[in-house]
Image 1 (cartoon, helix red, strand yellow):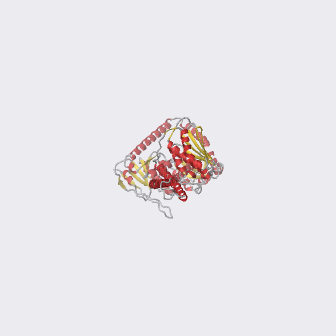
Image 2 (tube, rainbow, N blue to C red; image 1 turned 90 degrees about the vertical axis):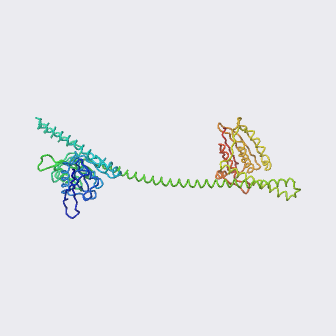
Image 3 (cartoon, rainbow, N blue to C red; image 1 turned 135 degrees about the vertical axis):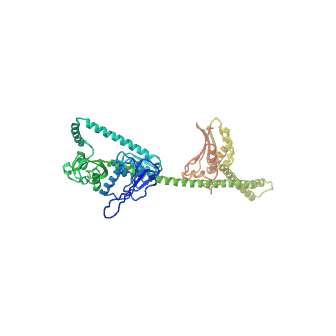
Length: 574
């Protein structure tokens, strides 16, 4: 049967110091196991997992409780020391206690006992793992979950404790036997004292000898350098005053705890330059000294403390940046969703527009062809002679109907291109023959405006160009037609040249030119720079550029006001 001694201690928050009352209540553990001490906060209910640990339950001040008085600290240390005599492991409740200071007190009381910190959450566990990197004097600590306590972790910890105690007892016995059998024991002790005196002079850590009242009796050179004062000026001063710490209670508590065994605590102190440092104050009573005095070592942990603070600051900054990145990622995701939605709406609108263009083009083409046909018949005198006014009217009507038919054809081509239904049939093409045939087609409108169209094929490729001749002809007819329209009465030159990769067609006119700010707009749909002067649909260049891209080429313009324009169609050879 396992017995649990529940030691319930409470700190009364009153005007006077009170001594915690310690009571014991026997309880039965859920199953036999290693003898353990469970450290928890006073006044709190024992954690459920403690039922699996056979041994003692000892309360320590929780994180939310003020530091105990010296008398209370001494009684707690005494109670802890008594509890550890028979204990084989210590279980610390991390949910109610600050586990690292508690582990340090256990390590100072009995360095052989294995400490297990019971952590309830993974986040708390990671935080403790980080803190343990910068916490000196805590010994070896295991981190476990409440479920692991119900398993065999306490028994494993007890096995480690038993091995450590066995090793310590063996070592002490060997040392004791060696001293008893050595005839040179006194001589070696004298040599050891001289060695220690020299060692104190070169140790990098400050070392003080202090009486029971906390007054400095002596100090080594490292202490003088740290405090920036000579040794004689510090002898007789209180250790807490010399260190510049306001926490006099901590320094005295370390000395009080060192009466029976070495004791330590973390303190803040003042460097010689006035800056605040952090260190571990370790005290040990000099053996057989009456009245008692102590050897005190101050291990400077300032750089480690600063590094820990920097790491914590960096962790906070990284968390902040991570939060900002997550917010930005969420905003980008929302923006992407909005863009996708707008894209879908635009594609739907474009598809609807294309269907409308195609339907209307087919519906309009039949009546327009009828108007053009009947007007042509009337002008030819099929229906009898016409008066001059009536002939002029029919001629204007025929011209308007033809213009409307061109517009319908352009709209239909645009709808096919947007719907991806345009036909491209590539085949070998004799470039010179294509241009000569094109030249014959443009002669009538050129002659009507007194415009000369010249053909320059001196550098045209000899090998056939593999492309769609119908689409190339459509593009060049549009370019030459525009050149005749805007460069009326001037010379229009149609050139062809070849490069290593492309065949380049150029249409050069001597018209008024195009301002640079307008050059990108002329390739947009339904854009005309002079709609009042020249008739047109505003679709020719837009359709021509899209056809050029379907053929794998490009259509560009170079122009300047008053300097004419050059439109260049570049098509790949293959």
